[in-house]
Amino acid sequence: MLKDSFVLTVICLVVVGAIFAWWTTSSPHYYGAPVESRFLEPEPAPAPAVVAKTTHRVLAPVAEPVAPPRDIEVPPSPIAVSPAVVEHDPPPFPSVEQIAPGAHGDAITGKYGNPALSAVTSTGGHMVETFVYARDRGRSSTVIRLEDGKVASAFSRTQPLAPTGLSAPRRWHNE
Image (cartoon, rainbow, N blue to C red):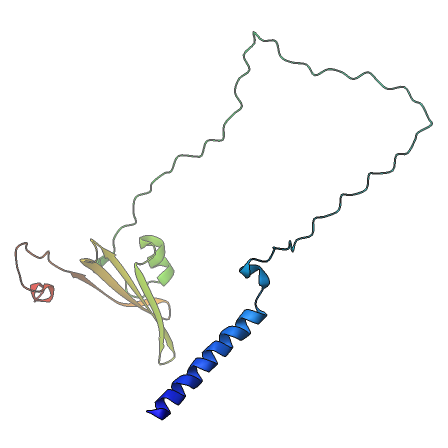
């Protein structure tokens, strides 16, 4: 019991000492002391020296600006009109029959556009690219595999729509 009270007393003394150290080293304005401004206001710049000119010259009369007569309408200035956005037809969707073996990868992307997914890897010293074209939220897809930039293989897959009202998990619908 005496040991516990001694430990508790030491902890209380440490806490009180920490609070006292913080209180004595902290800024005094937190405790009601007047606040000092820490920002110095810039001194006003001295007025430029006045130099008296002794030469006289004749000033030309100032022409008043010409205002257009009030009965003439001034056409509005041309407004920059942004060109109308032209929507192009989406590129065609590739099918396996349209993909020629040995065709270059640039010809594929030029004809069908950028794939929805592409991956590049290296296997046995050959660069292997995989292009995946998808539509209908991924239900129809064509996968094209290129080796060293030329078509090596292609296949298509179409998932049937799941009938409504079935309570089976989605993975069972495709089997």
